[in-house]
Length: 123
Image 1 (spheres, rainbow, N blue to C red):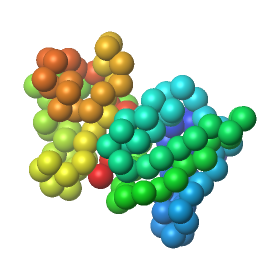
Image 2 (image 1 turned 90 degrees about the vertical axis):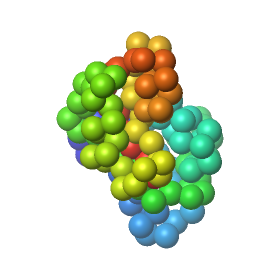
Image 3 (image 1 turned 135 degrees about the horizontal axis):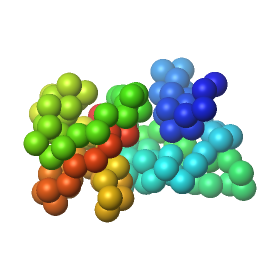
Image 4 (image 1 turned 90 degrees about the horizontal axis):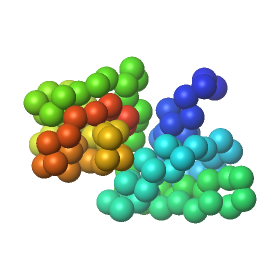
């Protein structure tokens, strides 16, 4: 494993999905990873709970959930370029962006006229 907890956690979730498992337990987690999972949970892709030092993630409806490496910095005008690069179709999934107002989906960042650092994409 590498030192990027977000990337490692998302890879473990996708590997569990490919192995047709309904849930996965993450031993390492951070506040950033939990915030990314919160956004996915709000949109019905996953459900998770914290049990002591472990994070138990239930996979509901998920096709792809990956970290963006390197974490590109995108201005508001360039967000659509990255959305087309990482998502397979229009209005299918979203890119998670870290702005100075916190983590949010790409369409919320465009509405609020905020740029930021690309963290992950999900569909």
